[in-house]
Image (cartoon, rainbow, N blue to C red):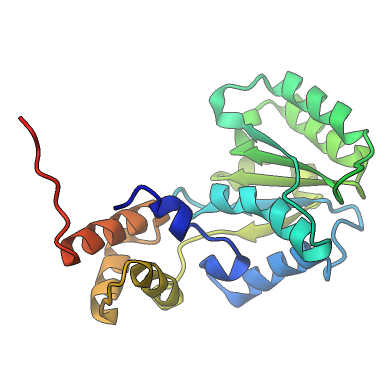
Length: 228
């Protein structure tokens, strides 16, 4: 029953994301649409920061598609994605980015570099190299960074980025999204139950979706016998 849950319920537009405030959402919307003059003025980065489980990585992966579809109406762009926590050699990674940043983007608006958990670059010299990479083609590249530890991101990298907090949102902001997920499975749930669940999960998106799946299964009487 839940084989396609992640695909069906994953946020596809900015309105599907749950933000702490409308101001944060408006800032990101301005970057995506270009209304904020992005990239320009020495800023070609979007830095998503906040605690674990709030959806930073999912959002980071979707921003390039939102930009291309919104501004150009084109197909999904090619995105250079780096999970920095996976043990990537920082110096080698940045050198690769520098080489790609120098190229002209022929089939999409920008070159996109997504660095998930960018604080794991750690080395001060590597962080400075990232700052240099962002300067190579500032009008033709967009860097999307995520971190759980904002102070570990070099001040120069932060200065070149729009900083957007992705933190636990109030329960009231979650209600429409949670109701929409339940509706995908033909289930109605009370605001009271949802509010209690959200309070228990304390803004952890992974835990929230796990609780939603469990509740749907319970409401639909879905159970698989264990074979022994």
